Length: 219
Image (tube, rainbow, N blue to C red; front, side):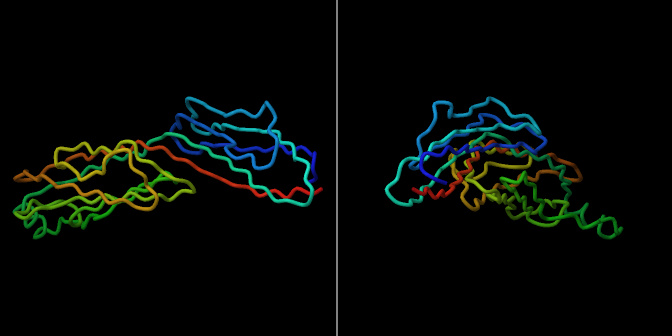
């Protein structure tokens, strides 16, 4: 584009998930060499419901230049949301496991389960394929949290609610999730026969996406 010309910059957050986004914020944090019009303001919304869009539009004016120049524009968008999951896990005693095995009733359940919302991914890993069997030695549940989106995640709160999960080695919150975090929890399996226990996972997090755009200004 040429000096003195106007550029309309548009950025948006589109919620394609079946849950709400909260504390939405979109801003042009780096205008580069451009002059910003007074109408360019930070977009802030308390809530963005499923399939709604929050949009920022800024009118920028290219400055006068002595020679051809490149400049970078920086836009940041952030929101708060949650990743939740509920698992029903069967717990059996050693004797009951052997009885089911002899009767051919063991179906060979899964050992891992992965859930994601496109930003954060959580993999739950049990000590063995389900059902869980009460043993004499300690057993642990491992949770792997990964950033699988285009931005940067900050975990604000991580909670597992269950009668069979002890105190986890969760990092002090908030903590950043650049790539992957592993959380380990001891299992408390006191059942003598057969039961089904729920594990409820709740992750509250903030997600920020930063984009840059390079513009060439000609004299």
